[in-house]
Image (cartoon, rainbow, N blue to C red; front, top):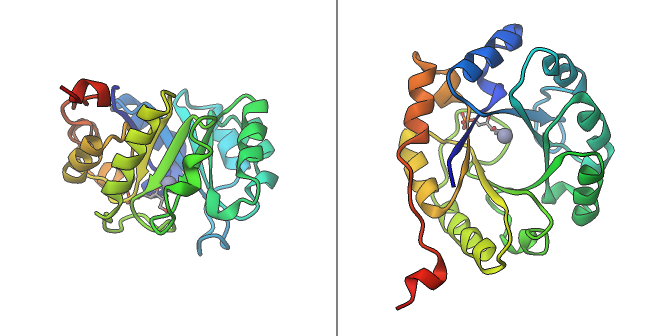
Length: 228
Ligand code: DX5
Ligand code: ZN
């Protein structure tokens, strides 16, 4: 599966968002990862649906909305109406995760489920079949520029095999501390959508940074191919 790069808006210049989106699109990114924080699920407050709606008019990028909010079910419709292509919510913030997936799909968007580093993969097991994407957080959500948490590699690998064994299709996204070095580790473990904030917007040459994070294609073996 080809790797998709999703620059995180959190590290962009908030005074020039239209230009920043154009910059990463011209540099080869497929997605823009939009970090929505409510000051409760995580300490900071960032972007609301109004900003997403304005950005929709000036960008053709795939809008990947990462909701780091309590009561995500109350926010789905505004972000779908604002032009989100994918809406991802945290299982830790949801009482009826599966219903939220249905809600997102009914509004015509792709639906993702995010897991904090301290959350077991089992929390996603019953959702994999109906989700378009599982987001494995490789930092604790809240801030850009944090250090990659290596212990999440095993979870990514387990998820890769879970999806393979279920014979379903589901993207594996990672978010937090991704740079050209950690990119290799997460892609080897099975991730195919890579979010990166500081490593892209903080780079002198954004196109080069995206290229370095995308790296060389890694070929995975499927279970039955492994057996002799
Ligand atoms: C963290 C956000 C991330 C963040 C990643 O809560 O979900 O998307 O912007 O930033 P880096 O790539 O700098 O770790
Ligand atoms: Zn994010």
